[in-house]
Every structure is written in C-alpha cells, then in structure tokens.
Image 1 (tube, rainbow, N blue to C red):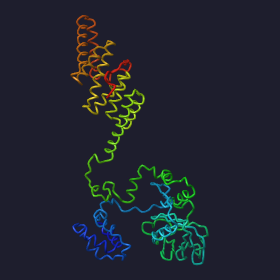
Image 2 (tube, rainbow, N blue to C red):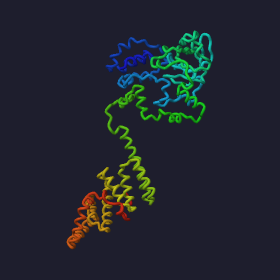
Image 3 (cartoon, rainbow, N blue to C red):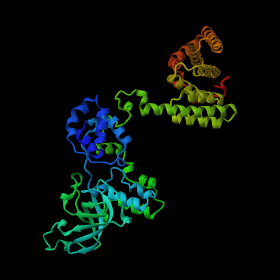
Image 4 (tube, rainbow, N blue to C red):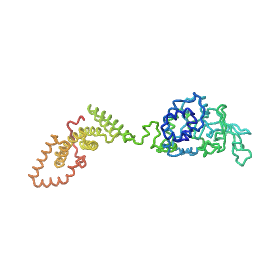
Length: 469
C-alpha cells in the first residue's frame, strides 16, 4: 500500500477510520506492513456530525484497491504554464457551476472552504495604499479553477510580499490601479473571510512553483476564465457547444494525454469493482467484439424490414434496407442472401451469384445460401446454353450439383448437356476441334464461373422459389 497516501487519508478522517481499517484489512499483509507507522500518525479530531461511517466503511473495504501503487505509471505531472494552455492538448472548460444555478452564499462559502495556501488567484488592483494594494479577485488558477468575479472577493497584498524590482525604492511604484495580477495565496482566514496574497514564488505549492507571478496582460488571463465570461454573456454558449468548440476536444490522443497527466495506467483500470481488476479478460469482453455483436444485431433488424418490403412487392425499399444492413455489417450473411435473392428475381443473375458466394465464404453451411446459389447457377447455365456456350454451362451445372447433389433440375440439365456435347463431338469432327478448343479456354471458367463471366452475358430471367428467404 501507498503509506503516504494512506496516512493523509487517516489524518483527515481520524481514529475511527483507522479502527475500521484494522477490522477490514486484518488479513491483508500489505496493510500489516504499514500499520505500525500509521499508529504514530496524529489524527484530526472530528465530531460525529463531521464523520461519515458509510464513507469510512467504503474506504476500509476498498483500501487494498484505493491505496494500491500499481496504477501509477509516473508521478503527477505539474500544471502547465498558463501561457502554454494556448496549445490546449485537452479541452479547458469553464467551471461547472457557471452552467448551474448555485446560490451566491453557497458559492462564496465553497471558495473559502476549498481555497488553500499555495493556490493561485487572479485579480485586478482596485486600491493602492502605503502598506500594499488590494485586489478584486476574478478567478482561481493552477490546480483549483473557479470563476469568482461575481462573489465580490478582495485580497490584500502587503508591501513585504512584493518583490523589489531594483529600479524603484518603493516596490509599489511599479503597480497601478487596474493592473491584472497573478498572485499566490499567502494566508486565508475562513472565519473572518480575509485573504492575503503574495507575489513571491516561494509562497506557491511545489506543483505550481513554475508559474510566474506578478502583472499579466489581458491575453494572459486563464482560458477557463475567458470562456466563463463568454458563457455568462451569451446564453447560447452551452456546455456542449463550448466543449465541442475547444481544440483539445478534437485531439485524437486526448485520452492518452489525460491518463498520463494523472499518472494512471490504462492497462490496470482503477475500478472499485474487483471483477474489473482482473488482467485476464476474455476476447469477447472487449469493445471491438461487443461492437461487432451490436452491429450484427442492428443489421439483422434492417434485413427483417427488407424482407417485409420484399413480401409486399416494395422491391426498392427492400433493396435500400439490405444495403443499409451491409453498410453496418459488411459481411452480414442474412443480408447477402436476401439481397442476392432480390437480384435474382430482378434478373441480375451475376450480382445474385456474387452475393450468394460471399455469404457462403462467411458461413459455408448456410442452408438458404447453398439452395439459392444452386438454383441461380442452373438458371445461369440455361442462359449460357441459349448462347451456345455449352462447356461453360456444363461447368455451372457441375458446381450446382457439388452444392446440392440431389437437385433434380441440376441433374437433368447436366445429363442433357452432356449428351448434347457428346453428339456434337461424334457427328461433327470439325466442330469437335472447336469444342475441344473451347473446353481448354473455358476450363478455368468452369472452375470459377463467377470470376470469369461477363456482365454482358446477363439476360432477363428469374429464379423460381426465391421470392421468400
């Protein structure tokens, strides 16, 4: 366990959490290894009203997950300089309360509650005295980001908290009323509601010490504050509209960047559900597999709608539904078979054969795909017989029988064309040579008819029995 993080939690929640932890984690060797150090820690005294037993029980039960260091890939990255936010690798948004109706008093009490020493505030000088100047605060910056311009908060920057520039005997001579100032919180009196700030870099917390304090230009005001002002003055600037308008929102690497920024590994998801802590997920549990199932289900709904249109003679609507299904799921077998049947009934025999063959490539045992392809090959063979392309037609009949050896139409057609070819060979020696030559040229066509047949060979015709799937 991360003992430093655990000690911070115990310091805040107090002895009651420590007692609950000892009960819940008594068999956890990692906790037992740090318990002696935790006994020496000093805890804040909390009243019963402040303590929350349900929260403490949750922390105690999930302590091995909450305080496990394995999620961390690196230390927390320091906040970027405000000037670097122009790059905006992620969407910098106004505070959420800008879009909510939070009462004035509640917002004011929350800022005094959340503001800490070392935080950064931004304001404008409204008064200069011999002992320092006063700021009207606009917003917080750095780690805590709030828009507080309407809360009428003031802060004092004492003259001793102003670095000497060397060119003036009086440090205050460098500043004028109306200057924008970025300062660090020196002290905060939550009861008297008084805030004092400093321009010395040493007053900042370690994670913010690289941010320069002092006079800033209007262009250097925090991005989240500028967007808050825009949202306050224009009611059409909704949260969604501002979010989608941010450059960082469209960054394709935004998720990876944010994970790295907070030091979390995406290979060890920090879920409080123990089942999601497992490293051995099944392949079907990943998003790609789930998305494929969803696409297949959606495509099937389109196919059903297409079949209904087909039965009622609305062929154009049926074709649109089948095409929509194949856009969703390119290799959807049911959509291919249904569209192939529609092509065949419209007379587009070659397109029908292509769809049936593709369906069988994805599902070799599909009954309707085999049945319809067999019938379509026989129909195409009859067309080729009329064009006196006997060898190619014979190859189609043999392929049809390979799909369905008991098909009587294919058996009869093959027997008939075989006898015809044999008679031609025996009765006409010259034609025998032409037939043999054609056999050699069309040998490949008989093996793979769909890849060598030309669209020009199509003629009108229909496949009987394919009006229904």
